Length: 369
Ligand SMILES: *Cc1c(COP(=O)(O)O)cnc(C)c1O
View 1 (cartoon, helix red, strand yellow):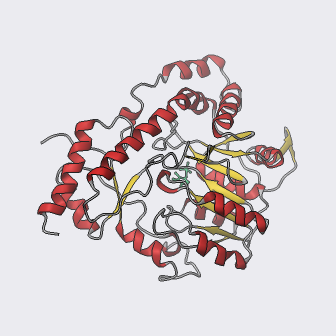
View 2: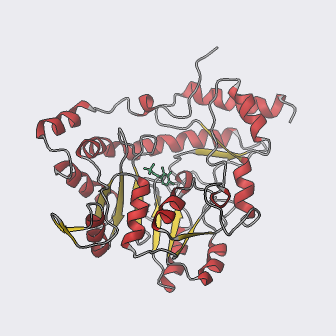
View 3: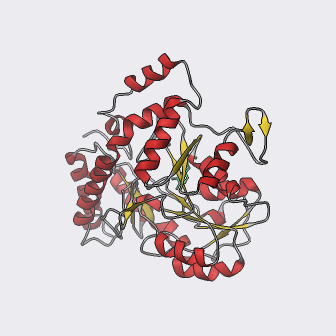
């Protein structure tokens, strides 16, 4: 049997990347934390995103948490989040002692529903987190416009959407703050953990620079509460600088794989990603199938790996009983039962893409469904 097709391959993605050059630069500098590489990456990534400031931090979850702290979100405050995005935003909100207020998603984009959001604004939220899920930009321009009327800041969670664009603007440049993760499987991934916050607001950027380092104003002088140690390190920053120039072509390659899948699946009873435009960077190629478990088992038999992003909606996670019980978010709950992710990453070869397509096709034509 042909070899298995994984959901993601760091080896395939990074085939053309020189890791030794940047690593040597950092080793030779003998400087490992908050130095030239981090400052260099922050400048380059801010420019790429089209914003004035970028602050490197230790992870995407930290980026969300420090972003919320910079916006003065406090214990007991409500923060609007979608419940189908893997609990990352909820983790950050709960770390602060704030309360996630879940809002249902749009059935087409699978991101925060603008209509449901408008209703939820009556609950007086302190902030809104909009997640650009699977690489698909949310309805962020409309959301930012209505949020601005009520003076509510918007954090864009761009951990799955590095480089996604609408009207010439990139993910992270629409809201008050954009947060990024550089976890190795992301569209821009480090060789370890990493994250960043981007913002046009100089005041917020300065505050986040303090919060990522104990709340210091100057060395050993603590000016802000809620500070932590959350720094992007020099090695990861040097590697990210090496990889950033590849990002646009990698995103194009991901989108081209998604285009082939979408075209091949157009007559099948599955729901495919809604956009193949520049507002979608195909971080995850997610389809919706009624008979998900049988589908996964069948195509798994052909060596095609799948996964579910994400199986449990945030408001139904056992560790944090929510005021919003089962049934509160009908679209989210249905979608969580149907979503399944197929292999889609730069370097996935044409023959493997064809094998995925054939396995999916066979399921619908021969598995008696
Ligand atoms: C990966 C991810 C995060 C968290 O990033 P970490 O670096 O793993 O903390 C946050 N939000 C979304 C949507 C993600 O996909």
